[in-house]
Image (cartoon, rainbow, N blue to C red; front, side, top):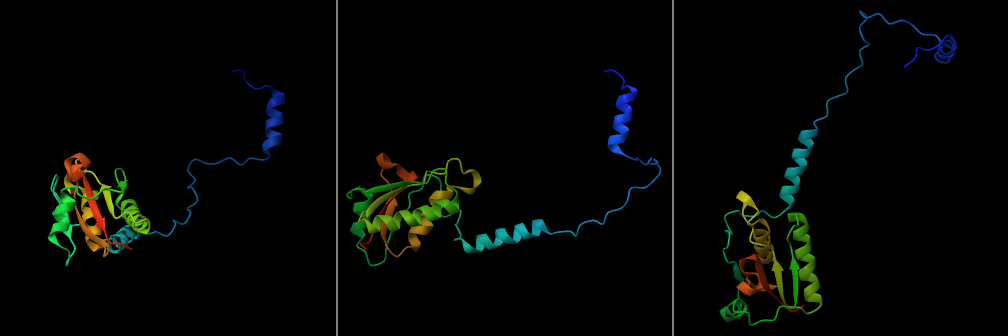
Length: 177
């Protein structure tokens, strides 16, 4: 790189204007610090609020590979037996794999509502066995079990037959609309 000639130096000084030399011992001007914001506290409170608004899942309620089943009070035991044996034709299916709990919760609700509207009363929910859920267990399976037990329109449900997904899927029998 070549040193600037006199003409370049003159043009540079004209462009920048007057300058003032800074002394190394001068302290930098102090700016007032911004007011502290409790960002982490806000996040913690929001997380607690979200947890209170969602349905709690009992981690010990459903184990890996454990079959789940339910029969609504007042329904004949034969209904659950027929459901377990695959006597009903599955009319619709939803796969919850890769969904978060919040997304899966809404997907199940909307799926079951749509199925009842279209008179598809025997449906399958594929939630997986939870093999990649680590210590928290089969999260989507637990969520499915909890949500189905709380719905008034669910007559019965049971883990699917091995050919239909086994304990990684649940067959649900819905009440007519």
